[in-house]
Length: 109
Image (cartoon, rainbow, N blue to C red):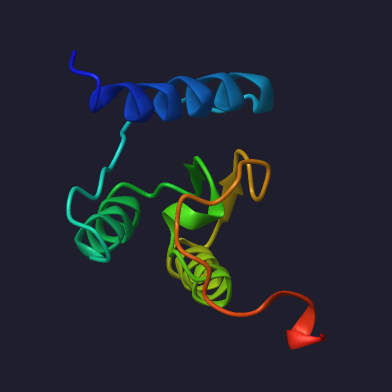
C-alpha cells in the first residue's frame, strides 16, 4: 500500500466501523479517482438500484460534493433514487482540504 492509499484505507476502515455500529454491512466501496467527477456517484446509484440497496455510507459530506449546498443536493438525490438513506460518517468533523468557496460570517467586516 502506498502513502497515497492511506487516506482511502482510513476512510474505508471508518465506514466499516460505522456500518458495524449501525447494524449494517459494508459490501462495496466506490472511489472517485478523478477530482470533481461524478462517475463513481453515478455508478453507485446504478448499483444500488440494480441490487435493491437502500443504505449508503460515505466518509464525509465532501465526498458527495466539495460544495456544501451541492453535497446536500447530491445526498437528497441519492436518497430519492435508492429509496433509502445516506449515512455520513463524519459530516463536518474534519477540517476541509478544499479551498474556501466564499467569505465567512456572511462577509461581515
